[in-house]
Length: 210
Image: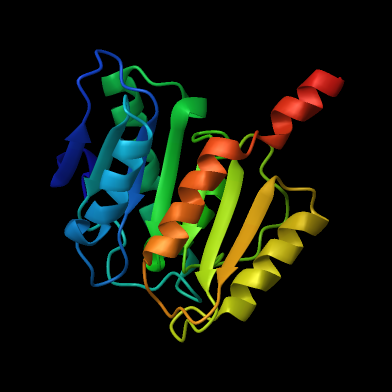
């Protein structure tokens, strides 16, 4: 897979230098179009943003318990795509956010473990870490959002991942919506935007205290 040749839906503002840059990754067996509602919401909330939705980065695996080599290949393909778009739009890593749903969320979390700071934030909807992290990202803020009744990606695993992140000192939030299953529901998307607009990354507080 050449990540630079991926078919991609682009929602671009009229800003000469878009800020922030959002990259959205769909679920396994899904399509880029599945992320359009989230893309439009992000574009509405951040008027100068660029929103990119590449097709097919999740491949055919769920991300959980898959071969480590296959996961690493997909993480590096995503990293290449992210870097190329940051260069294209002249966007800082800290001004880039990566959002994924389902397998796309699991891929985004694996990405944050391998490439701390390549994006400033990760939004993980209905996914969890494919492999438990052994250290906390220092330069990436993680927002986990999950339906309580998700029977594809059980909320218990996502909660355990969050608790492990907290024990490692990560900058992370966890939001669970009652009565929702494995879906990119408006309630979760609205909460994600609230997190983006109101949560000051912990690294900024730490820098100020230092």
